[in-house]
Length: 149
Length: 149
DNA sequence: CTTTTTAGTTAAGCATCCTTAAATATATGC
DNA sequence: GCATATATTTAAGGATGCTTAACTAAAAAG
Image (cartoon, rainbow over all chains, first blue to last red; front, side):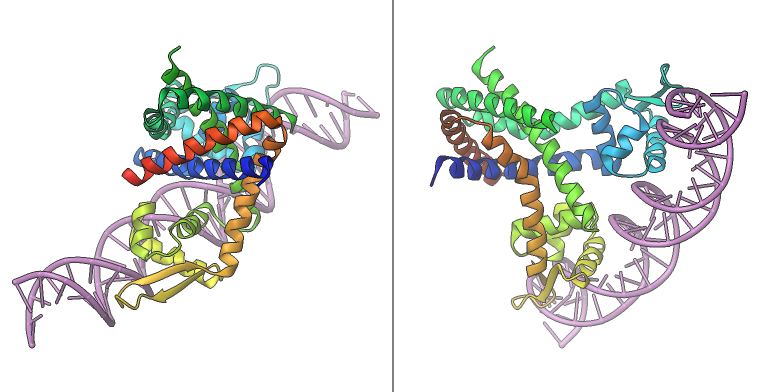
């Protein structure tokens, strides 16, 4: 097997395992708190963007801006989001996570990561070093690809 | 920073990036085919288990067996799932992916992995080797943790 | 053999998500 | 300044997903 086929296979396998696991843990946690996945995805989006407008959310989630507006409204009323007028364009809104919303997201991320820490514990010191370096390489590469799009 | 903190951080970052990216690409693809996320998650579950009963699905997805039964019914009618009587227990059903269902899932996985291949292309030969080894270590460890539960 | 448990289905009903259409308010182009 | 475009909201309605409750059929327990 060539190197590039080998790494491709290894990467796919790893991404498959982690995504599968991650999604399951996270969705369980979110459901246990009484939030739906669409609501949660929207919160995640705000978390990643730090701040965004209704139309950013509707584009990214591929729903109409009406739907985005309605979901945001619910989450504002639940105290997870804050919605302010954009001073530079008074038609637009600035959506941000409230303290409560940020806590929810960060807890859900920790939930998702608990098993990652178990993984770490299973590795010897030299394995840890190798893995750590490799992951930095990958994360860098991923960011490059992401930014190019 | 100690090694174990460092690797934990690197792992979290990497899992974060990949999960985020993976879920987005996959959900877009699935939606573009006219399937909902709950339907898709159920299909994924059957894909991973190869074969399972209604109650397996309801347990794993944390919904009632009535809900699982109804969703399966829809997917059978869409031609994505097959439902047969379990010969060893005639109350139970054996749910499997149809050819069409398998194709859908595999395409969605490929969709999810297109950017992984872009990543690979961005790495030099020695980086590829390092990364490949590290991923094998991780995938092994992940399987161990998964099986222990 | 009868009772109880287990696996799945069906029906009714409620909540959520999402859409379209119409409305408001602000910004931009000419 | 006036017409058009943009950002968001609101209301009405359709589709889906889920739940509970009632039911059928088969297996397991006694």
